[in-house]
Amino acid sequence: MKYLPIKKDLFIKNRKSFMAQMKPNSLAIFNSNDIYPVSADSTLPFEQHRDIFFLSGVDQEESILVVFPNCPKENLREVLFLKETNAHIAVWEGEKLNKESAFETSGIKTVFWLQDLEKVLAEMMALAETVYINTNEHYRAKIETETREARFTKWLFNKYPAHSVAKSNSILQRLRSVKDQIEIDLMQKACDITEKGFRRILNFVKPNVWEYEIEAEFVHEFLMNRSKGFAYTPIIASGNNANVLHYIENNQQCKDGDLILFDVAAEYANYASDMSRTIPVSGRFTDRQKAVYNAVNRVKNEATKMLVPGTIWADYHIEVGKLMTSELLDLKLIDKADVQNEDPNWPAYKKHFMHGTSHHIGLDTHDYGLLHEPMQANMIFTVEPGIYIPKEGFGIRLEDDVVIQEKGAPFNLMRNIPIEAEEIEDLMNQS
Image (cartoon, rainbow, N blue to C red):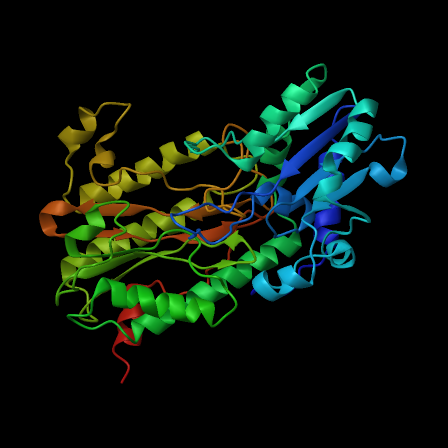
């Protein structure tokens, strides 16, 4: 892994918090992700399942975690199963976790090789009444590929049909949405790496540069700072490309007079950051571009203030909509008749600001979190309003990542990333 070791205290704490919410005489099972094939012998880079990472820190394929807090055999209350490593694997694939390094990573003392899984699991299942399975119930999830977790669950149901079944997801949705200070520090690191990338491209962007060249500058800076790269597929959208919300081709030339919308950020230690900025190709905004830019920034700043404990996500978005409506009226992008005649299910402001303002962020860019429940301290949300004007050939989105505080204003993890229009112009025009 490129990232520095994480204190195992985090994973010990996460397991204790999870097990405290389990039913009596129950165990829970978590699987690593597959390494996904492309074709021939090619594969995609491995990405660990975020749940097993959250609970163990293990960042390796073919790993299984089983927790059984009430197990009468103390050594089976927390168990890791790992692919057995050897000298041959070390030569061809690099060093894998052994039993000692697995303990240093996770704090779990009992480690078996995978070939012992069925025998040890049979012993544990005989002592358990309920088994927790791990399903992905994120509100944005669209799963078309059978996962390693899903295959294992089918095998488990066939092997042990008499056990009661419970879901891990409802526990994890709450646990993962509230961050430990170690997690906040890791996400700050991801944001700091993103800042370095953004400052790098402010000195790089000039008329006629290509979007993919800017992408290359970002990834260079990210890799130089122990990130494995982008936290999500990067958007580098010049001109009217910015009005395609998920534009990812990044293959057009940036023209003098255009704006470039960036939705680009680094990961660090599997934790995401999520940044949007918009800059002028020429280094100077036009008066109209700056007016729209400042309107988006005002909405972002006012929306951020609302992210306090007790806020309900849906109510928050209604209030942000009112802010945006006022700005769009001032910019003459909508008029009073549009507002008076609007469809409540698709308000007038949605013509120019059609996406949501905030989502949870953490181990996933769109992280776990139950949106119908009140916001809590140490949740981390994005704040990302935008105004999109196809007729004028540009779109603007600005986005920061903020930590909800017990008292006072949210703490902005991206506070050091330039965002004011004048600061961006000054930095782009330094000799």
